Amino acid sequence: MLTLKQIYDSPEGIIAGLQKKHFANAEETINRVMTIDGERKTAQQKKDNASAEMNKISKSIGALMAQGKKDEANAAKAQTGELKDKVAKYEAQMAEAEEALTKLLLTIPNVPYAIVPEGASAEDNLAVTIGNWPNQPMIDAIAKDGAVALKNWDAATDETIAAERIAKSEKLPHWELAKKYNLIDFDLGVKISGAGFPVYIGQGARLQRALINFFLAEANKAGYTEIMPPTVVNAASGYGTGQLPDKEGQMYHCEVDDLYLIPTAEVPVTNLYRDVIIDEDKLPIKNCAYTECFRREAGSYGKDVRGLNRLHEFSKIEIVRIDTPEHSDASHKEMLAHVEGLLKKLELPYRILRLSGGDMSFTAALCYDFEVYSEAQHRWLEVSSTSNFDTYQANRLKCRYRRNEDKKVTLCHTLNGSALALPRIVAALLENNQTEDGIKIPAALQPYFGDDMIR
Image (cartoon, rainbow, N blue to C red; front, side, top):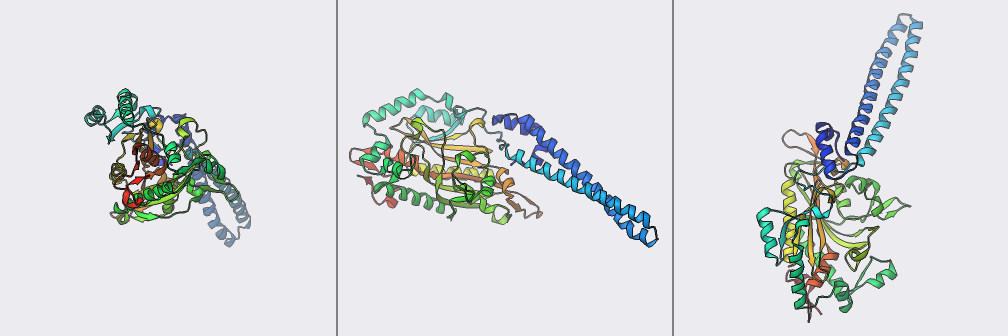
């Protein structure tokens, strides 16, 4: 949630940032925030004035009684009663304004950093890194310019390269490979729960477990403390990290208990620090967690939902950081390097995208997506979003730290990223590593899987 200080310090800048995120009625909304806050301040000033006058008159009543001025004392008592009613009225006005202000602020997204590219959709995202990909001209372009807009991506060359690679060895999509090697039963999942809830079997289940253990081991090496949080949270936690009210329709809601199944471990792990003041010496805090994640994915259809491409329940390892404003950019870069390192070790073709304003999440100030290439599907699959939220979540959470220098308490920065989400990683591993003898397991994963092939 944006702070009032941010809005008052630069209302024009906030409006421009919200417009960059394609937030409708940005100027009207910010003006409304300041109007409601003005009403709250006016009510508070009237309440303070009435309280001061009431206290002053109250102190005079005793003296009037002592002087035998009973009528004046009674008049003073009546006046304090009227002022007390006014104080109550002004307090009610303040409470009403504060409630309206909070509700309005909760509907306003975070403001993107200046580095975020302009754009309304994924086409305007910038490719800033590409790895394990044979398209040398594209790699050279990124190395020279630092970024390439996806709408200018050399699609024809990419498709030619993909076609050449597929021609060498016919590639099956992962849902056919899953059936061929008895790894995943999608129909059985439909029987038990419904579409989007696959059942992993035998080597498929072992591959899931291998990836989970590999990702957690790598996070441990990078200094992340593992957390095993609940996978259901209360509404306060959803509001704390910004899933509510923005993504209420995408979350599974247990209505009787008013609890939500988590869409990501970001929610419970970040909420560990709700209403907490942290000593600066303890920052940055680095946590990781493996959880099942649940998303309704309402409105999804077509090729995007085939097989493992889009699920209602899936496994994911999340990394979360709580940091100072001065160090959060360095933390973000370290997180990006960590996620990239995982993809390098898995030997998957990948690219890193800096998201445009129109394609960013409600809460992020800066976000990078990682995508892996699916050789059988001829498309890129998102496997991680790694974001810096600035003080946006921290303000909702009241997550603060005490500075060493002056002991001042101020808002932290929060960051998180997938490291990694399993379904599309599994899809890419199966499709990209298929051979006539089976599916090759990357060397880094073999100690966790216990074999070099799926046969």
